[in-house]
Amino acid sequence: MKRTITGLRIRERRRELGLKQVDLAKRVGISPAYLNHIERNRRTIGGGLLVKIGRELDLSLEQLDGSAERRLHNVLVDLATDPDLGKGQVDQTSVDEFIARFPGWARLAVSAYRGLRGAKAESDRLRDRLAHDPALAEAVHAMLTEITTLRSIAEILDTTQDIEPDRQRRFQNILHDQSRQLSQTGSSLAAYFDEAVEDRRHVSAESDAEEIFYRHRTEAMTAIRKSAATLHKALSGDGRDLEDALLRTLPGLSQRPNIRDFYTLARGERIDAMLTHLLTYREPPEFSVLIDDIVDRDDAHGDVAGIAVRLREILRRTVADEIRMPLDRFAVMGEGCDWDIDTLARACDDDSGLACRRLSLAVLSGGIAAAHVEIDLSGAVLHRGGSLDLLGRIRDIECPLWPVHEAGPDRAAPVVKSVRLSDGEFRVAIAVGQRRSPRANMIVMSPETAEKTVYKAMRGAAATDVGPSCRLCAHIGCRWRREEAIVYR
Amino acid sequence: MTVRVMIVEDEPYIVESLEFLLSRDGFRVTSQSDGDQAMRDILNDPPDVLVLDAMLPGRSGFDILREVRNTPAVQSLPILMLTAKGQQSAAEDAKKSGVSLFMTKPFSNAELVDAVRRLAS
Image (tube, rainbow over all chains, first blue to last red):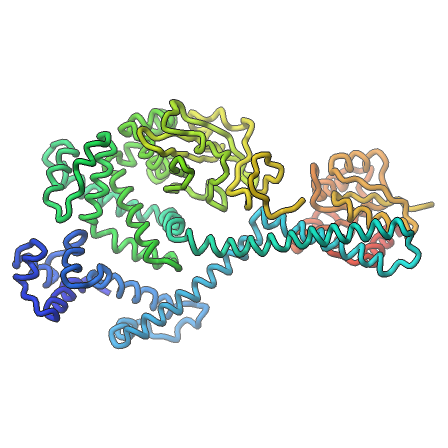
């Protein structure tokens, strides 16, 4: 489905409302000739202007730019070719006609198909969890052991006639104790599965977007580099400083950010905030296409709109990062200083967040593989990025023994630790506070990767046991445990 | 001569029930709950039959199985392995490592005693 629908939509809707071109142009602050070009699809528009036109015409962004139809089209093609549903029974070329003639049925079919895919993904996830989650494996093992004891003792009591009274009482006590333990294990397992489903419902949009970005980061980086190059050229093409160029550009925006607020921040952070804001209002045209494409191909389900919003934020932030510190340049600097985070942060306007975000993507420019987590001082995770697999199967870092919880804004030196995850894998984690900000960042890498860095001494160092949350953590004997695990041993 | 059975299992209630059952069937029973100590005991004074749990603190049941099969002095020791984890893959691993018999928890008492009798004969 071609992206030529926007101009047509605007014209149709304007006519429906009885508006003249000149009136709508005046309301949104552009010339009638420019609006004419837009309506004839001779100009591509996005960002602030599209939002403004949508507001005047009472149309959503999705209705205007055709992304809703594109998504419908893509999902219906997937439905038509889904091998589980009898591939080849539907003529794919009729998809657009189906959408045009029966839009309501098309949306209903997509909704039902998304539900089916969601249920399948959930069942795959639970099956995967049953097979690999160390805490769950322990709980199942505990339950089978308790059942074995109960069965064996009950059989003895049932089939042995001449059992001594003392022994009989002893076995009855064991039955009582094991049945109590089994009921606890069973209740905990039921709560565990309930929680797993709840977790999926409530935290999915943000974490799903981070996972999707991680899986498609190579192709996303191509779009990010292109957008960054275009924007950088537009802003500093005349050779003047990037910040000056940004300030000169901002007054031309339809909705100005509060510049006075920006001046209260440090220079690097001000540039960062302005770039991110600017990208919100002048969204690169690559973003919509990329998001639609990877959301569909990734079979995303649940809060798809929420995932798209979070993906947009990640893309904007990464374009702003790319302008401030291009990944290729960062990778060369990283090799030069053996990936010392202090040195890299100084090279990034003294912004450790920027240095860590760049480091987490450095593998795309031939650098090392690392994951990045940003938290605020309340412990809430604000961002996860880079090679997320390094954080373990469950990506949470709720455990207070992760070094990121020790790094604050006033801490001068990074906190470096060797850690052992709940599944037994070892990692090296480096945490740094963020200047003038109640935030901290952490880089996580494998011991093999740490060998190539200034942190190589951490390979083989005594490791701290860390987990996701206490409930899911398999380090049962941990003295800092604040909540029972689902395993009773 | 009385047949000696060693139970290597870290769940005390299971050990207690197995000791009771096998003793009543005429076996002389000893037990050990730690994998490392069990391996030392096997080498010092080999039993006639070994009932071995797969998951143990210290050395696992699979480690003990492999070590026994690689030690000439005890490599023909009959071993009944018990497991409650990953039944299909654990059975295949145990088979590859040379287990004599394999039983998954929960088992029936009659099946277990019968298996030990077969191994003892």
